[in-house]
Structures are given as C-alpha cells and as structure tokens.
Amino acid sequence: MAYHVRLIEKKDFKAVEELIKSFYREVHTEKSISKEIITKTIDELCSFPEKGSIYVFEMQNVIVGYMILIYYWSMEFGGNIVFIDEIFISPSYRNKNIGSNFLKTIIDRHIKSFIAIQLEVSPSNYKAQKFYEKNGFSYMKDKSMFCEFKDLI
Image (cartoon, rainbow, N blue to C red; front, top):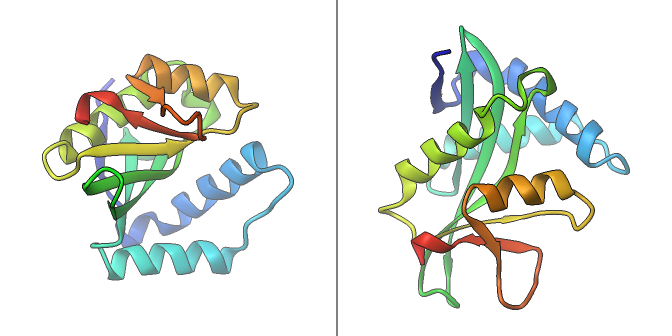
C-alpha cells in the first residue's frame, strides 16, 4: 500500500489534533491535552520551523499518524540533535510496518543535518521499547529514558 510522509499543512490540523488527543488518551492516561495547547504547538512549529517540525503519515488520502520533532544543539554530543517528541500511529493501522516506514523516512531525511536522533520511552511501555530497539535505537549508557540512534553518532 502506497504512503506519503510530508510536513503538516493547514488542511491537516483537525485530523492531527484528533490523533494527538488519541495519543494522550492512550499513553498519558493521567494527563489530558487541551485544544489550546495543541493549536499553540502546531502554530509555533509551523511559524518557527527552526524549532521543529510536524510530519504526517498519509495513506490513501487519510492521515494515519503524526510525528513531532524538536531540534536543538547538544553540548554533550557536540552537534545538532533531533528529538522525537511524539510519534503516533492510529491503532487500526498498527502492526503493518507503518511506524517503521515512518521512522525510516524521517531518519533518512535528517541523517545529514543531525548527529543523533533521541526520544523518550516510558519504562512501562514495553511495546514502544521493542519497536524502537527493532528500529536501531538503544538506551544511552546512563540508562536515562533517552535513546539514541546509534548509527548516527
């Protein structure tokens, strides 16, 4: 099945807002997220692309996932880092290699500009941990919640 990974566009805002709400219901059950915070985040990253990006994963003109990336300089690594703030694939599209394809596409697009891609995984989210390990991530030496894409360092 063909797919398309692209930057968010204004026409996508409502669909991405619904996916973000789903993400928070599923992963952050103790914390909800307001429409105002979602709108503020989308507006900020669309207005200041040097801070980060929001990508959508589209199949047959349906947005089935999103990824929020934040860019920053790391003293520790001596270079620019991409931090995956959020990645979410709609439950009905999971276990079809969509998440791996989404991640690979993003890594391929950013590999030359950044020295590492990091993310945070909850210690209780074993499915996410296995997913990231399968896609080449590993825990940093200090066992923090951050992972790095080892091939980029």
